[in-house]
Amino acid sequence: MKILLTGADGQVGYELWRSLQYFGEVIPTTRKGKEINGLPTIALDLSDMQDIEKKLNAIQPDLICNAAAYTAVDEAESNQELAHKINADAPAIFAKYAVISDTKVIHYSTDYVFSGNANTPWKEDDECDPQGVYAHTKLLGEQAIIDSGCQYKIFRTAWVYSQRGNNFLNTMLRLATDKEQLNVVDDQIGSPTWAHSIAMVTALTLKNPAEGLFHLTSSGKTSWSGFARRIFSIAEKLELISNSPIVNGITTSQYPTPAKRPNYSVLDCSKLKETFEIRMPNWQTNLQLCMQNMIPNKRKSN
Image (cartoon, rainbow, N blue to C red; front, side):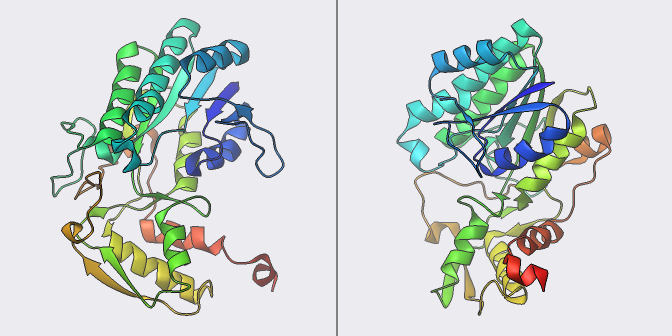
């Protein structure tokens, strides 16, 4: 199987590059075709529809795994055209090609498609009500794939982190080096999800022909401030930081942003479990496993 992977330099894409190797030939792509860990990638600009069509016709993949997205939530408010091209138009091109060539599509979406105004976990068929440009364009991408009639698996996830890239985990560890106190939002609730876990689940579902839309996050829930406190607790035990900053919980209104964030982002993953017999690990366990990989090599060998 020939697998076209987009966003190979992103959090999820980087992990997929490794996990999908066991199922076929992975063709990793990045926007500029940069080298990653000494391995080359192919340039694929998801804002250029002609480039997408050209690369698809040249590579002729059996599976398109679209892990790339315009994820700068706040910047999307002022870069609407670019966000729309990458999050909505590009998936539509992939889906159109998939129908013509009998290719399968795997695509990743977000909790942001919901309003966030709930107190019980969101199910796949709950009404969507995106609150910003990023959220709206991600929903359009989902709909384009579903409406095309292609063979697809769409995984909605949330609060993604990993050892690499720009994410909440790495931001907290960086701030811990020079901050004694931090103000972190306490009234937004979600399930922190390790990118490695997303990639592993994706790989596990490949042998199952089931199609559709599935929620994919860690089990359990917390607030951003709760997430931060757990990060610092683990980091101090692993000697990744010398001292844990004091985390002060604040409200969303005390930390205004250009784009609105969902207040409640917990996703119901029972459909994933019932369809693929996959049980998602607790977020605290996965965070511990992720951060253990951050221990310097010298300490690991002792």
